[in-house]
Image (cartoon, rainbow, N blue to C red):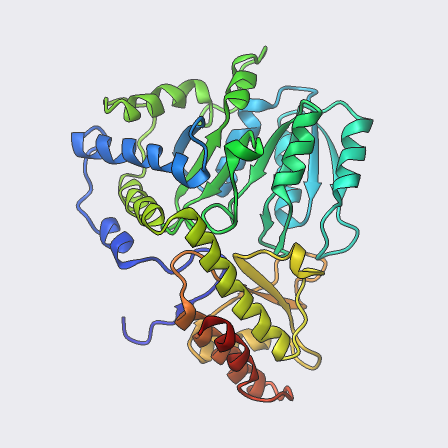
Length: 387
């Protein structure tokens, strides 16, 4: 497409030609044999990506927020205790969702923006209350921080608490081993590292989560998200049988099947390693340019995106200059620092060339903003990692 700009926001992302080709296929009936087979395959492939051979997958027409809503609606009953490990904007959202279903919500918050709650603080909170669920935002897209899911899920399980992981900005980009780490719910959306245009909510539930759902004593308070309605549909698709509750997003499911196969062909270990390498290249470039990042340390930084503070003397006008140089990045989202930083997504099909183009656009924008630096230093730092 002539004059098309490179999209480097933290979702939607750039998609492979094969995924876009699947989106352009003639729309089939949702009960056609070929679609039933494709949807059944996609459900099976989800287990490989989530590393959850024992999990129950769900594919829904909706956004990542619907996936969060589905998890809460099916597991929370009036008065249940929910501990929210809060790292930013989307942790706030999970707290609001839980409260909507009548949960008694307690939050463990990071002391400052860019930090994450310590494991000791999380365990202290678990000891002090009675909780059914602990929610974790694996990568908070507003702050670009990443929490230690392996450690925190283990702590939750030791207290008999279900762990619900918002993996919207992490699944298929960050390391996540759902079964091995004892994660009870992992959820995501199609438009980020999964690599499919927006419109699908994806949920993987452990046997313990499904048991908790079946042991409810009150009806699920969300008709559309009720697993009582959707579980028979998911099982029917895996058994290659037609079934219906609500019309699926047919073309998106075709595209999802293509993308999940591509992820499987790359292999999860290689895919995570590629994301780490690309992330390091971008972050090293920002440091070489003298730009401070939102996460307080590399250990707390996400692999799938970066949050970068505007340098002194510049502001959000930098975004326009970056766009003029051919790359679209995102402004700030966290309310405390919204006008002080920008965000760059580097997940999915992104490659080294995309990263270098983005860094080059940022350098060009910094020159236009009269920021003093050694031009080319960021590109050199990234190239040293990517070569």
